Image 1: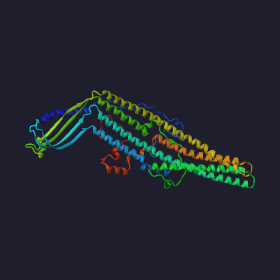
Image 2: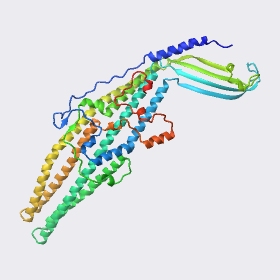
Image 3: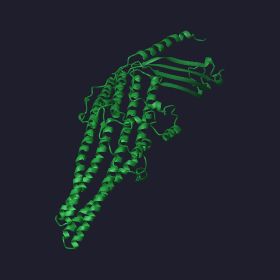
Image 4: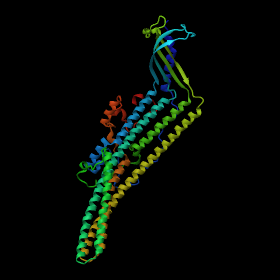
Length: 527
């Protein structure tokens, strides 16, 4: 006899009511609210006329140096740096993890199964045919859906969504660090090249002084002491060059790693003008509150807190009973009696089992409660981390801004000092040749000139490094990834060859807007 569909009406009512509760029901646990953070109203050097507080585009901040070689280096690093590619792949991981969390919102078990069995019943079996021998086949669809009454799965989607946003911010932070590191390495290379050039110039000057001392010794106008002092100073200056060359090699090796290539002398890339990149005297820094939006590490810290906040709700949901819908539908047949295996899909051979169930962890509330406490403690830790990140970001800007401005003042004094030292050396050499001054005066003047020139070159490099530090502290440079792949085309092709990624490797699917925030409601299409 065929069962009336009326028998299914109560079940359909239960399902529809459950779905209504899921959509409109509450979610246990706290909703995230941004904590109070200490942000200065203005920078301490805001009164300096070299510091501008208006908004600016920091997308290509390195172009302020007007150095085509630096531009090319950053372009190469952006496309080839392996650490940046790793950060990009982590975004893909987080995006896939979000897909897993979304899947938990739907029926958690959806399985099709089947079996073919040879069966012999016992002689004492209560079945209709004792001592029977037959073959049985079965096909079934089983499903289990734990309904999200308390928001456990929706909180999971929130958490995974915020984690995805955090990894994207981490990628942006890696890009900020990369552009700044490339610029810093390049400036260090040019500074060291300048210092080596200065050292060689002073070697030539000191060699001339040694020649003069040797000539005067030959004619008996000076003692051997002058020659030995000149030789000692010359050797000291020559000895400084290998030390500088070691630093230069190390900087080039570091730059090669940033470019994603094996260490080499970079002769093809670095050929051309070898002057230290000159920075403008002014810098646009905006206002401190801009850091909450601009700095990727600040955004990442907040997104991590958002993700952990949702975990509190997911843990609290375990304190309440879990309601599920369970169902099995299939066909079963055998070859016993008048039956036939080939008749398995006849409607009369169907079977099903469907209905609601619930489970409630009533005897391990201590564990569940302590897990809630654990998640809450982690959340509080991340809130404090976020607040500390905001403070550290402000310190970072203040430190680098001060270094940029004070290095300019130091360079102005050193330029005057260098010119005075050069004049002093010229006079000392003339007076020594005339026999008016002893050789110690010449040695002192030579050492003063070398020190002043070397300090000036280092300080000019520090000015440019200070500007790089300011732009890094502001969080400039990550905008160049807008609308672009976070992993290279070669890696995308390789991953597609291994795995069916669907549409997840398209930029739009894993590249959220900078101000994206996970919604407290389930918004499946948006994820």
